[in-house]
Amino acid sequence: MAILIYPPTIDWTWMKQRPQQILSQFAADGHTVYYANRTQTTEPLTEVRPRLYVVSNWDVWVNEELPIIQKASQEPIGIWCSNPLLAKDLPDHLVDWVVYDCLDDFAQWHPYEPEMLQKADVIFCTSERIYKRFKRISDLPIYLVRNGYDPSMELHLLPATAPSSKPILGYMGAWAPWVHLSILQRCAQLPNATVQVIGPEFGSKFVSHPTIQFLDNIPHHQLNQHIQHFSVCLIPFRINAITLATNPIKAYEYLASGKPVISTALPECRGMSPYIDIAENMRNFVELVEWRLKEPGDAESRIQYALSNTWEHRYFEIKQHLPNHFLS
Image 1: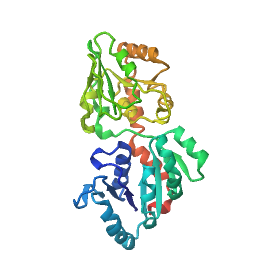
Image 2: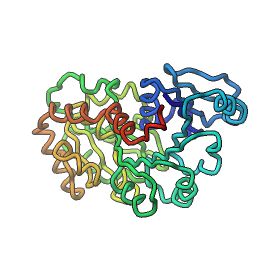
Image 3: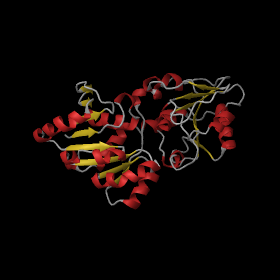
Image 4: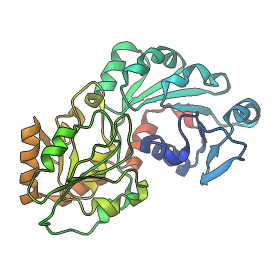
């Protein structure tokens, strides 16, 4: 068994699915995990799941508690980090190994990555584009482990729904600059259709539109109540440096519902064809939506694809790539 530490990036309540799911898998497998909230308070250590603890006062914990753990523990201690901006502050002198799990390819992160790579022992990447970039610049062990589906969402258990005369075309995720508003506006012009957007503002402001509904942020465990009413699920991303390297978690969640999924030409979504329909341009996107409203396609094959790409599957991939002495 091992002890894993996740340095302060964001509070556990709002944590991204990938780190939260992977750390939870480590804890479920018997390892001890310490997750540090970004918000600093005097709250005591909290066990949010068996063997998974949230640290609310990182500065005190890393300077006072971690050295005690390090001296007393017979288990290897590792850091799991997904933010290279934290590289300079990692307590790597108190641990046995460091993993850099690169979730996104943000250009503003690149200047911080050399220091991160100096401290890392292993790199994991969420997409082939990120994987290839690191292969060009680093001799570290580098592995491609994509995102996955959380079966506890129970999207794969949703009842089948009949085609609706008033279809809902759904997008869930951050309302960010890479979301192609024009595509959604064109989709909203389809007869009787409503476009529904579920997610927080992230660098872009919601734009009022008569047939686009903005529902803001909804707790992750409640998303199935909305996805079940979607007729078609949308990934209307602009093609840019960020999205070319994106492996959208929403793609697995959409597919788990059995609903048809239309995406712009993202390489990672293209790799999920034929379960996802790929649009080469805006007109093609709207045409594919119209087609799937009439011919939803094979829901069961989509569900089975998602169930063969769960976070548990990803955890086993990670374990396979980690050296034995990291975990025992």
